Amino acid sequence: MDITIITAAIDKEIATRTSDKFGIKMGGKLYTALAKTGKISLATFSAFGTGAYLQELPAYDGKYFVYTCLTPKPEDFDLR
Image 1: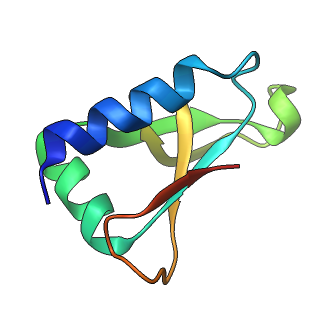
Image 2: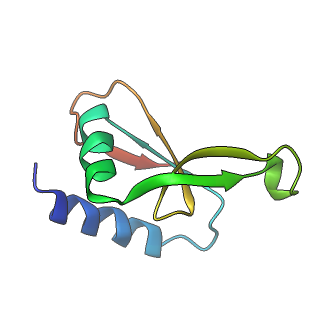
């Protein structure tokens, strides 16, 4: 798994979005690799962006909520 290529692919997909209201689903191995490089860290999110019910959750580049799932390939990702 080449983390540089995958990071570029994620960044390219993010750049196509008109809104920043989405999360990123990814396999566990990709999540671990991105966390080791510092691309995933904790960030503060609120319910529906209202500022209420603040939660510290994993985020890609400190902006986009990240969650893991069982995928056919551990390096897969999907923006939702």
